[in-house]
Figure 1: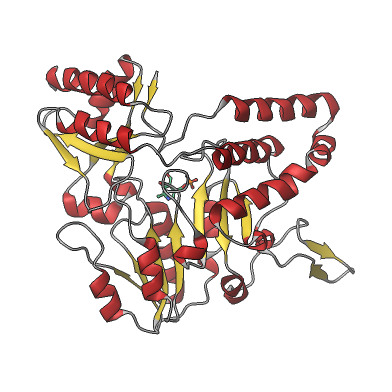
Figure 2 (figure 1 turned 180 degrees about the vertical axis):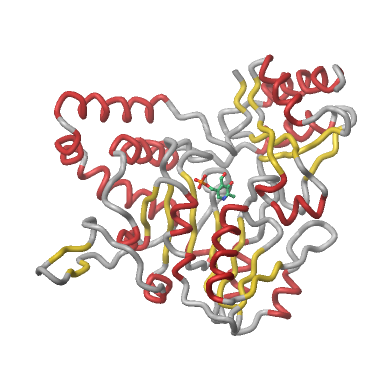
Length: 376
Ligand SMILES: Cc1ncc(COP(=O)(O)O)c(C=O)c1O
């Protein structure tokens, strides 16, 4: 099997699977709460320290969630905005994030504006510099979108925004684990990501870095016994004001311990050294007849999207699956602003990681030519 769908979910390493199996075995043999106590050091301390190191963020500012959307929704809907506030998104914004921004707009009367692109597909940073003002309350940038492989210049944007009032949110779902991500260098106040993609963690794991100034500015939210304490018949107090106050108590010990193992492997490995695989992927797709590559921007990652005038994305995906090659059919409405502009309803997304080899890309290239050659 050749897995070219890490942008969906990466292949979980054997060590991660083993950690999770050990946790589940112990839960069955000794009890779930008892197992959580046994793994307390891992799931309540080590995993946070590792994540903080990887994100280049203070440990008190990182929190774990079961999905990146949940991480985003723990923060963004609680922004205290009004009709005078503007939110900037880019054409590469993820649809799930947009839904909560539209809800926020409808509830608060704030407005949402889309940062324009240059003809190359790169974000127009000149426009941003010229138009940023103190009524911009939030700027949201997806580091690498789910629909195509552009790497947006999140650090440069952070420098541009730093003197201004706005909070800066970066969606690092598709970038964390495949390109360097440093919350400190980006200068954002919110960074969200998923464990299951390029970090190769389990499904149902995700995280956020939430800066203290952003946490302090949020409208009151919901807390449970994870951080709050009912201390009288009529009142409660919050014991923990760290980013963990955004979490809820209940979660999967196996998933969190598995994430910790994935982060350990990530810290020990050199996952950024796979330019040769990216190059081979690009050559394989470019060499296929009739293919239109959807790759805006000057800087690309290991995600490559394309479509074919005659052979639909679902057919390409099914034909490659027969050859035991995993690619994914993406839908335009998941990256709706950019894809609608390009008239893309569906396309094939191929995503590589360090476990893929240039030889696999050759096999994929041959299988792709065959899949397209068979016609519609
Ligand atoms: C760029 C981007 N942001 C956010 C998400 C949402 O992640 P989750 O499914 O963990 O909520 C995805 C999922 O693929 C994504 O690609």
